[in-house]
Amino acid sequence: MEIKDLTFAIQAIHSKKLLYNDFLDTLYDAILSERITSSYFSEEPCFQGLGIEDRAYWAATIHYFCNRFGFDLPDWTMKDEYFLKEPYFSYKDNGHAQLYLIAESPREFSMRNMYISNNAFERV
Image 1 (spheres, rainbow, N blue to C red):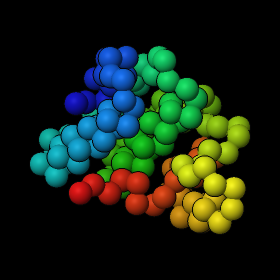
Image 2: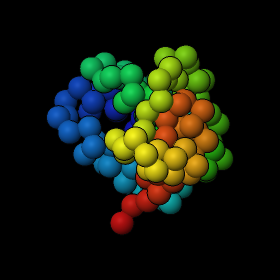
Image 3: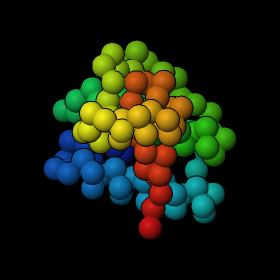
């Protein structure tokens, strides 16, 4: 699945988590087999039907992988619409979990006011 294919998959699939995990698996496979270049990420997906948090999460994910693997960052990931005004925490806890997420969240997420675990991209 290429990034441009997200447009159709997002509209067709009922489970966002399943789509996200499938994308990560495909992305890791493509990176490990050296089948992708920076152009893989260049086309902005249509995130129709997704909330602002989901759209920001996708943009942050692409930003993270571009930085991690040395790909050019596509301009679309830096649009204002992919940055949150209110903080988003992947754990819905008002205590220590939020402090933990703030401390360990990858920069590509925290700059968007999103806080996730630093192992969110680990695959088994």
